[in-house]
View 1 (cartoon, rainbow, N blue to C red):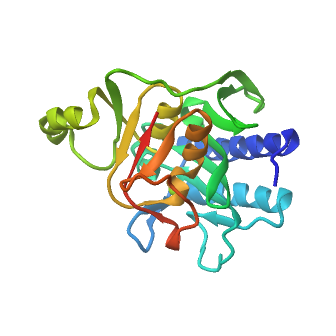
View 2 (view 1 turned 135 degrees about the horizontal axis):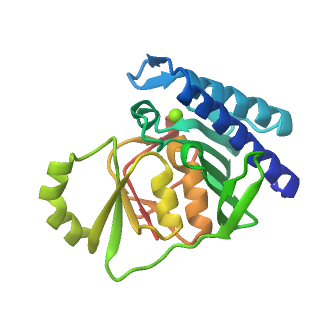
Length: 258
Ligand SMILES: [Mg+2]
């Protein structure tokens, strides 16, 4: 399947619409419950999910959807599918720091071949088109403006990006800093929530994002597509390129690099 200009525009509009609904709820009333795995889900996650899934089913009726907010257990044919995280960074969303994203990716033969990440609270939009990666903003009507091609940046001393809601506390991080800098040949650490970390590698803000432990494929697939077309990659700890459509859609530890 080819994502032509018309399809690309439809996906951009879907991400924008989902983001606008999330912001409406963000500014009004967030209701939260806990899922069976104890992670939070809000009315914004569910609303954004329904907008995106409805659109994808309408425009791409033959392509199955795997989403954080759907039961994905019936998906058997994994040759081609969408991977959706309608609101990545629900914890950041609940904290009110604006670092949450809408994520849509298309997987074909285990690779992310198309990706979109929208950060509605900061009006930042990253997406892929014709094998290139772009950063843009939206105007009020949802039209793209300030579009620019993004590329990874190589540095003599690397800049690391770490999760905000996971992993080491600030104190622990300071303690571990020396060892971490040595291990990754780095001299700076940026902390950020959600899939925006992968965008930071793709646009040259940082160079390395090491992620320890289990994540889900929908957390990283859109960011992976954007990173790949910008010249970077995500590798597992045994140095293999990240693949998608794994059992239960779970990732092992990985390192994203410029
Ligand atoms: Mg989510």
